[in-house]
Length: 113
Image 1 (cartoon, rainbow, N blue to C red):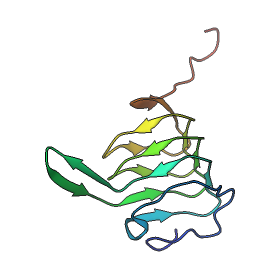
Image 2 (cartoon, rainbow, N blue to C red; image 1 turned 90 degrees about the horizontal axis):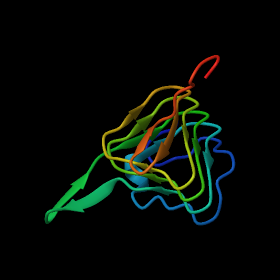
Image 3 (tube, rainbow, N blue to C red; image 1 turned 60 degrees about the vertical axis):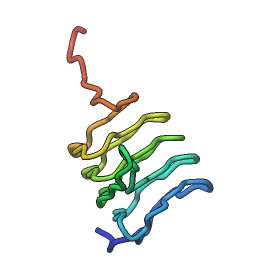
């Protein structure tokens, strides 16, 4: 895993991917950060400034215009779909896929569904 604020061999980092607080963000190797995605480690809530670390594990993908809020951990190979908002404090399991606003896990309906 990369050190705080560094992208260790990040793949597919596109223009206009915003990371305002680079010192609070850790990005693993082979991560895809798509156009318009935002990794924001702060918020102003009821007049109080709040911030926390964000960890994007190796092999993760942030879709186009996806938004990750403070206190989030995405484990290895997790995917946040386009236009999705991952709320503060979320823990995304390895290889899970999240979608929506607020983002929720997409589950495989299984055989015969």
